[in-house]
Image 1: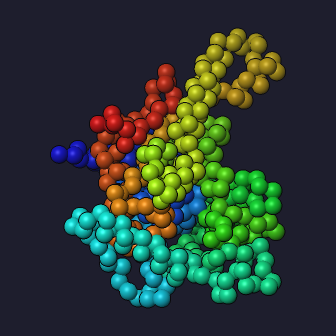
Image 2 (image 1 turned 45 degrees about the vertical axis):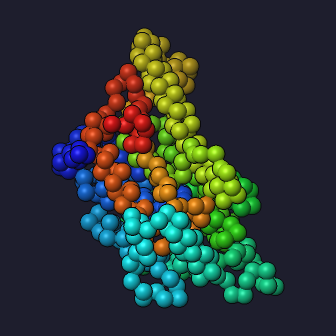
Image 3 (image 1 turned 135 degrees about the vertical axis):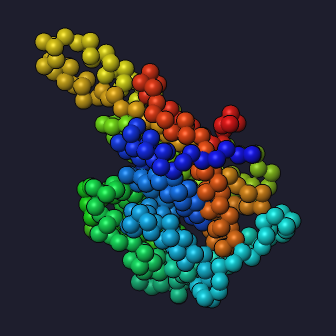
Length: 394
């Protein structure tokens, strides 16, 4: 029998005591993003509200819904968002009931129905999210950088404006929010942060503007595409800042860097996409672990410097690079279901959405059933990670 989660009040109290920052880091992955919503619901159950959010692509959209609503309405609004975008634009009133039972039906049938749902999304678009351009872009005589795409994302703006309170979202005292995109003209990666600028719907739309499906989004005279083209996880942005306080980071990824060798073209498409978008998360994590250990070591060594030498420029230079903060990264990665294929990131059927959501909810509940994983690291090991899917994650 699975372990029961720690009592919400006790766990939230322990986290508040041990950490000044609780960060939720959300990777891109299209329709798979419902997994992140399930993860957040489990955190909400445990009374763990992040103080910092960072997202790319669909992770940025989930971040907007979370940060742009009062704590008691965040799960409700996330559910409304996903129920909205998983409806057919041609029959938006159709109830979002599962098409199929993921237990009773053969895997081959599930794969076929899933492929049909993905095909429907390509042909019809998704209500409240995107719709096919009419006329198609190759027939446009006066195309602009913001209209060269197969789909129009104007419905997404309407959805965000309906579900997100941007005044609340832009209060960094309540929650710091950052989302990433890439500048089309320069190719440079950009982070939009509510501590430095006012975030608007277009900042979140830009983070998920994956070409050629979605159009570039104009922000202050520049055009931006999906941040996942350069880096599909904002983990580095969160961890590379000079760490000034102890942090608990929930890193939620939608693509796994590890996978089987493909034996057909569909497998090649799926594996190549997973490698491209996994962004070598564990490599970044290991790099940041070593960096933080070195900063902690530098901090401890500097304590040995006599007081009369601490005005030396070399000491001041080192002081700016030292840190004593502790970091705990809780890493969750979505696991593919047997019937899923290379189109899983644009397969928006209600059945798949609910399945992804349940997976995230179950994985986070399992993690919270091991409260010692959330404990503050020992100063001798200032950077630790826990992965619910590792073989030894008992």
